[in-house]
Length: 272
Image (cartoon, rainbow, N blue to C red):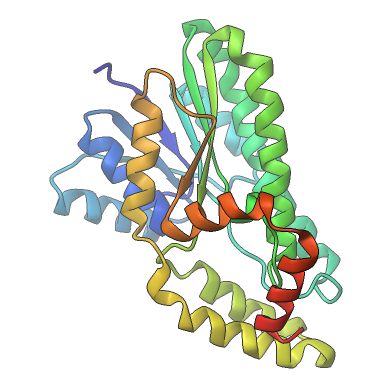
């Protein structure tokens, strides 16, 4: 197995942390970006607990100069675009500025990092760019409309980029987890409370209950990180990897279920 230099953004999150640890455990040079020194220390403690070495870099992925500096200093063989967050709320009532910030983080920032890394990968005639998407990159459901929009967008970019750079020996891969054990949705719900409108209040309460009721379906982040490592090390990686039982079922059924039927079921469940 060839040792690779793997850069993972958002390394202190559930999936990001599992990824940097598993990448290091496989013998690769594992580097993770975080936004604060306290997050860096948390990653380093987790690495020491497993007897692993992980490098960290401070980076806000929306900082253009910071992205340039990190990519040029590391020149990664593999870029795992994992940093991101969810936005909870109705499309109508979500502030436009909040939606713009989400799209900046979930779409423009990972694409910027990919574009910066491409010349170094092209020089080697080998590289892997992974975009952490979601089941919501295939389907959409309230109250995660803006989040689904960002994931649909990154998957569209990935499809085109994959074809544009294939001749250079560079693979573009999309990872599509379903529900994952993390605080991302819980945090998004709390932040979304600030712009709830009366006409959606009952719907939001119902959604929060449904999410709690389905907590047991959320996959362990390690399941996602194992798939990431598989995609990094595969001779011919798949363009997409659905991860988790819910993603496997819904991702494959969604294209064959009529929209009117899925809409009615979703509205019934969420009381919309």
